[in-house]
Length: 178
Image: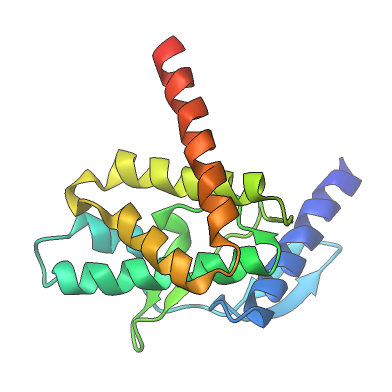
């Protein structure tokens, strides 16, 4: 068990550091304690994208703001994927908006791994799409906007989005069959 825990612990630190090198905003990693299996990160003052999306249409969260956030999400995921990094848990709970700059910050790289396979990238996007459908149906076509930004950000978008169509089909079959 200790080796398994240590591997996940080290993997999260490596992946978050790699994401930063790829130009994706993440909390700064300050310390790694291999004995206690703890990572110490910068505290990011801000709001989760989940909370912002849930307030869509009220409290000053308008379509313009939603479009900006969708662009930042697609851009960040494109950078990760082109760098061979899969987040593994792309949900709006794992995305923060910094209070001072409104920059998107990705957190929780505990399920992240490295891969250049279009299938892995497509599944990463599909997880986000399902999360958006489940939690944020009031935000309309936000996934389409995220994918448009992804296309602009990623050099390998075509193979990933073709694979995403296949992943969606498999998901629909599972839903129908149970």
